[in-house]
Image (cartoon, rainbow, N blue to C red; front, side):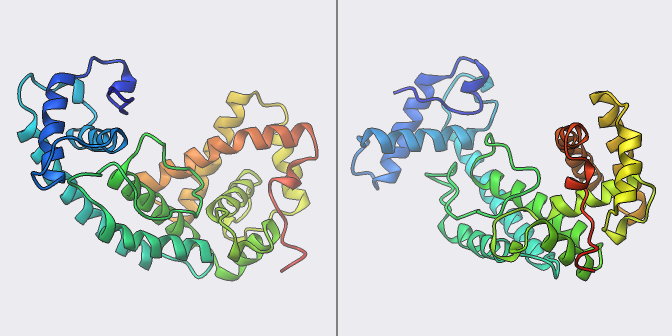
Length: 289
C-alpha cells in the first residue's frame, strides 16, 4: 500500500516508507484503542494520508529514525492551527457585507461544524464540512484539512472587506445585473464588483460608482485594443493599483488578491475585445439605478 500522498510524494521525492508504516501501526493501535493494528485497506490509507499531512510537506526530507515524536509535534501544530482557524472564522462571520448571499451564510455556518467534527489525530487531512460558496480565486487543491479551511476563510475575509467598501445599494444593483438571483446562488460576489471597479479605473472614473457606461467601455477598449496579452496584464494591474489607492486598500494580501483577480480577467477582456465588446465584461447599471 503506497498511495499517492500530496504534497511530498507528488514532488517526486523518495518517501520514508519503512518509518511511515511503523508509525501507521502505532496510530492504528491508537485508533482501535489497542485492540488491533490490522485495518481495512481503505481506512489504513486514510490514516496514512492523515499521518503524512500531519508530518508536513517536507516529509521526504525528515531525518531517518522514529517518526512518532515528529508526528505528535505535528498534531500539536495542527491543533494550534485549528484554534487560529476558529478565530479567523469568527472574524469572517463579522466581515459579511450587507450585500451577501444565502450560500455564503450557509457556508460559514457549516464551517462552524468543522471545529466539532475535525479529528486532528486520525483524519487531519479531511474537511468535515460543506464549503459551497465560490471564491473569486479558489483555494488550490493542494491545501488539505485545517489549512484549506483557514485559507478559504482568509480569502473570504479579503473579499468581504472589499465588498464593504462600496455603497450597498450600488453593489446590490450590480450583482442583480450580473446575476438576478445572486442571493440564492453559490456564485462569487467579489468578482463582478472587482471587475467593474477595474473597468472604471481603466476609464479614469470614480470606482465606487460601480456603473460602467458605454462611453467608459469605449475608452477602455481604445486603451486595450492595441495591447498584447502582456500589455493587457500590465494595464489591468495598473488599474488594480488605482482601485487600491482610491479605496484605501493598504494590506498586502488584499492588494495581491486584487492583482490576481485582474490577471484572471485578462482572457475575458481579450475575448470581449475580439467579439461583443467590453460591455459584456464591464456592466452598466443604468437599467437599475
